Image (cartoon, rainbow, N blue to C red):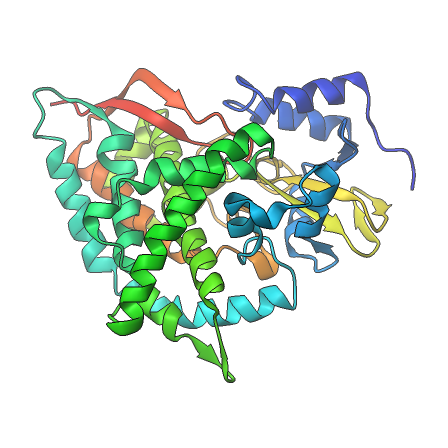
Length: 409
């Protein structure tokens, strides 16, 4: 393989992307990396791609697979199955490869159907209006958009879909946030927080699964318990690992989509106004907001057979990181990528991944945003940011833990 750029500037840019403020505004750094080379090498040896075409190849080409869980032994965790946080993650669909992934995806998909998602539309519309009504209940127009809207909406939607009782849903936010730290970096310190969180999530869901086994309802947990294809069923461990994944992904990504979307829209008041006035913009606007500031910024793979990336044949055994947020801002694919353009045509963001690992919950996240953001713009056309916010300090997940807005009333 020809030499791949790993000069001091590349290493500096990649290091900045792992820390604030680089995580807060990664796009200039992505652009500079792309100018230097379409493929660069990180300090830990991983290859990094930033172009749309290469990122698409990474997430779609079957020659690039998720790093197998057994590789955790090489970073000091041969006992990974003894850690609830790692076992729950690395036995879910998110990280498995075929044939295990194929089997689980087929069974879970049989329960998580488009009909079941679309049936939630009236409930989502009602939840959105109720939450926006709540903006008017406080003594002033100052609202934490995360606490008042961007978290309760998706957590209640996915909670209703799965069948998690309403009173239990708020408690999952901190548990999921603690558990998903293992998506960033795995250290003993991280596991000290993530393991008990993952165990608590599993215990909550195990109790609900047992209830559904004896008293099934019209919810996704019941459907997972009953899921069957060609005399194959999900085991209890598979139900719990994938229910935890669906619940966590069901609100984490959507919360980030809503917060990033509102910040982007309020930065372009004319676009925000148009969204409130033109119902036809709902679908393309969500695609553009996914592209403009993706809730998921990167995805990693292992090369299992030679593949071309950045004009270079990459050998088997190489680790590759695709910066999806960079691909979504590639000027070779998107005209004026730094411009928010709600009726952009031929839009195909990489934000939900691709190929066999394309996000199963993407239609639900899109539906929530297509209902929520236009409703917000209609109800509160004078909404503004107050300047007080707290970003999520995360490498792969981009969003806010607190975002204060003024409703303008």
